[in-house]
Length: 500
Picture (cartoon, one colour):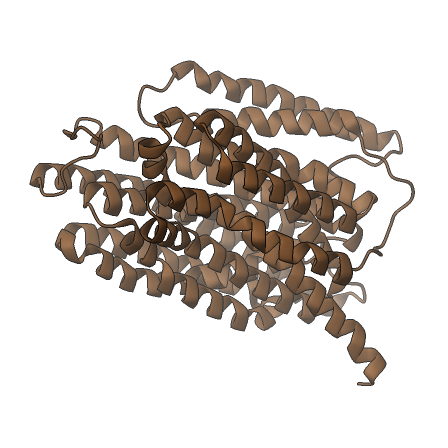
């Protein structure tokens, strides 16, 4: 290759590194709050509802902002949207770190979520534009590794900050760490991320479609993010009915809008690709299981068994390292073997989840963190396969011009799955330990055998539901594998690029 050929490729990878580092920050903020919820209650006087909203408000706003932001990035300017989102994320992170009350912390977290939802689709759209074929598979492999690291290291970071700085400064630094990192990234992004991108005709935002989609995501996610497992209002499930109504209205509007010759916010022709259709379902189910697994594992070890937040945070380190290495190595093979890798990834991950349940039954409480660390190291192989391969497989057939909105809708699936999984897992967990006696600080006695038994049972029941999510995802992975096999079998018969 000539020097002129190498330069664009090198610059593409540098831009990719900058963009992916920001995506990791947004994912860290989904999971690193798990270990700071108890300190928030102790130092800020946060109620259980407020601590729930610190987690759920971010996820909810993240999900709502994704598709409109992806659409704006595709049709206007991805770099501009990226910079806007990054600046808002920085300001919101500073506000969260300095929040004097729990209410203001919740507001800051919601603003953070909006910024994260603005950033993520731009990153996915950039990958679609910067890379093709095997290079795109490698990029998505690295992206999957980075996201896996962020997901697994989040609780570790929170635990380290609390262990180092104490309860109050610890949770404040958990949010505040974003500020210096973002201030470092902002000039690099301005300098290194390319401003040019493919375009299709005039920009057409479809404000009615944006509003209907935002309402649909809001009302579908809201009853789940309001589910805490304690004194929940049954009428919250009526939001699902409202969400169904707005979803039907959204679909009808989008078809009408497209038939009028205009560009809808979400082109439903994307779902004509089986790779995209199945990939969105798989990622939704996987993210219903993985973050919720981290949450209930943290609650079990920290509250039920009384282990230090630093120790609990360190449990996920081998998982993070293994999943990142596997995703990075596997990326080059995802263009050809994506569907098979996804199947094996779920088989390994399900086996590991069963292993975590076995640990809670067979291993003494004092050795539980070490045993779970070993099981999670094995578990990391599964997500390493899944995250790299499914990201590639989902967007494999999507036109580059629709990369941002297609990737953002996949991310909507992740956030909806995240909300559902955390709601179901935490509701089951909390409902089964609600009767456990607690001291003046509201914490159970980790030396009481009855308390430990109750927390162990709660962990096992929550994990059983998460295993079920993964089994359903495995079924869809098998369906997608068959579709891909048929596609490859028909490929020699056509001179065009095969479509599912």
